[in-house]
Figure 1: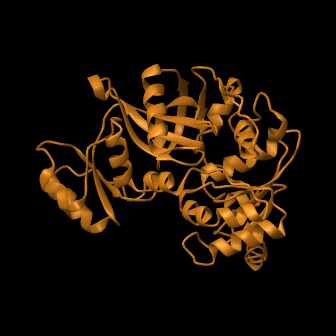
Figure 2: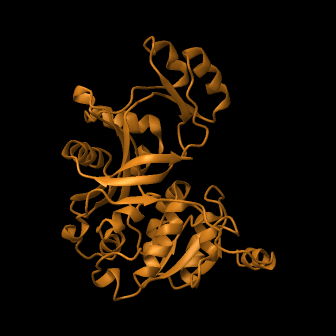
Length: 341
């Protein structure tokens, strides 16, 4: 859905913007939103048939995986070859190599808007994230490493998940500490958290260069594979305050999303579980509710002031996500994309 309004860099002056990870929902929807704003999208992914590479009118490029040592150099070469003005990361694995290449990209005239390496690390590493929020007094689930499971209070419900990663991959809910111990042998780089019950929410956030944050709150009414399949916007100052405190604690900048639960239990009425320093998979709801999230993010990316007045939104707007068939074609399409790598 096209946002309700735009500002100079957000619309009238079309830019050439690289979006990474267009095979996942955040990158895919971000590419479409930028197109609606009048920008030319250079869509990248490691999977040649990633849906975002097949969007009409994008420049599609296949890159190595983010954990491939060639990725940084390939990304820089791609930016130079396509005369890119800026780059926006659409998926977590791309963050560390883009951070390492940030100065080189800047020297090539490619803008990137991300927080510090320390901030990115604290959001990618769940153990470090727990430490940072605990130090700042932000309510977050109690957490343990595998060798600390003897410290888990009796009767505590648990979640076992990877210490890194995103979405719902390798997430399990053991019934006992003993089951958690077994799962820690099976889950890659495991991390154990207290399981929180309540109303799950996401805050779609934009933090300007002065540290001021705007956010769109939405209830995650139905979640499938870590993605909000049904969401509804709402306002709640208790939630907004904890989101602001979280963004300040981790040092967020630019686009990010904060997840948590509303429990209505005293000082832990709002519990923060995660921050992603990229746009969320359901950010389209923010725009449908009236917030010009991506247009203002582009303004900030290109050094213009973020107009927080354009990030206001309406309550009780809903979004539903579903899987659609984008395109079908001959495998020669696959070969052609692979040859561009």
